Length: 542
Image (cartoon, rainbow, N blue to C red; front, side, top):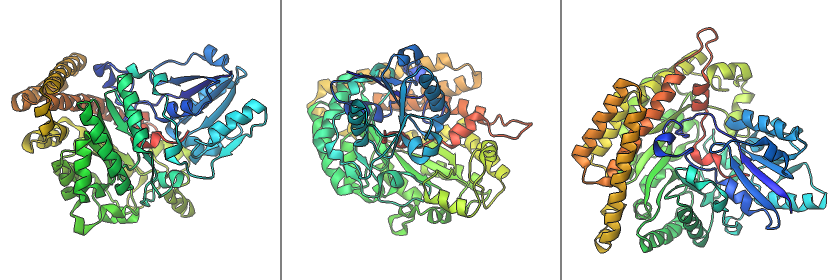
């Protein structure tokens, strides 16, 4: 029996990490990367497996030094820390293997440094390596040639996670996306044919999260609706499972904007208790969308971007979005247009990033051929490896920081939030179902729990915020939601979470503004913010 340790290195403070919010919620991290529990499930039973997520626990290098094998997985933005861990573990004479998104898109960074690297999906190559390692005949590089049959995957070993330290669980139903966005590495890694797990697999994973006490689950698919017909069947089974158990889990996910064109799909997601959906809108500039081949967002017959967002919201799904600045068709006017677009769309939470060319993507190849990739020093200074076309690098960097400040200053953020929750009286589907009239005790229990959650988070928030003006603003917002929607305990709780999230964004945008006056370099907070991956992109490869 071998002692195998699988590690996810810590992330820098980031948009999605919610690090400034987690203490208010009694947690250490938002969610575990889903590959941890899956990699553990792919290890033969005769080995001992330990999962360590540095985002919720410190590394004990003496403990790692006693392991037979250490596996590291991580994204490029975790690269510096991943290499530090790799060096420290190897110095203790332990074999180290590395896989994940960074090893897949930038294998040259770890090739020759790690003992073994895995490129791409590793659901087949990881078990194969373990067999060969036992026999003393393993290779130094593994690259899976065929896409994984998702229906063949085992149930991830959620029980090995320190679940009590996470706010959410993470579940993957599908891989792959049918679209061709130029900047995206998902279709390079996972292909354009979406592959799904069976309903039986999905239900088993939902039950594992329920047993672990994780009541909110992020479905980390890069595009849940890439195969609409197949996902509808799975959703119907999730609806049945939720209703058999009085809706024990809240779900949220990522999807493409064409969700707005399928009323049945929106209805099924609401009935399954998907409450929020992250959508890659990218830009209000149609020329930029066409440039980056985001053609699913440019469909005049389906309505404008804002009309489609409102259609999704009207179906009881809260829309979060991703936006990008720095496309070739962007000039400095984009920094004024984007805050207005978000206000008109009533989207309170928007990840705004600088366009970044990821190796292996069509964007990277195009810009490399055109000589428009910054070297490491310039990328450090401007926060991106892309040399912009419609403005100077300084204008792009400064405009990005300004647009983040404009979008997350209190009046702008709460203006968007209040437009949705007060002026439009936004409601989630699940809380309006006739189902609850047949289950009054379950409804009473749910309402009581949400009142308690609201009181706990509001109290912690007002105690934690030291800035007098921010604390006064938060108190004003909380008082308003009590007055106007106090009889809807779930809305109270969700709204309070969104107020707490502003505390995180305010801290981040303040740090972003601290550009080094001597060098003009983007601060660390700005670089991690601008290069932050969409949540799903952290998950799938080993």
